[in-house]
Amino acid sequence: MKVHVEIDCTPEEARRFMGLPDVEKANAVYVDAFAKAMQGAANTDQLRDYAKQLAPMGQMGLRMFESFVENARKAGERPIADPDKPDA
Image: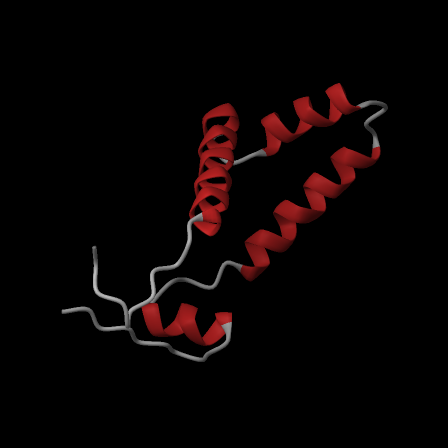
């Protein structure tokens, strides 16, 4: 049996419901530092190097994020099964 539950809420409501900490201020500091570093970059290689240095957990964090985005893209390409049709 499959049960599908859809909840309509804002990201802030979801964060509070799941008991996650509010990291808005820390994120703002991180984004500001990243933006300032990017302004001084002269080419794309320099931008990539800055991103690697500033990214959480450095290169490993960047690879994990790239993997996450790639997996999400692949999942979005899969056809959605029709729940009214029996499996073949």
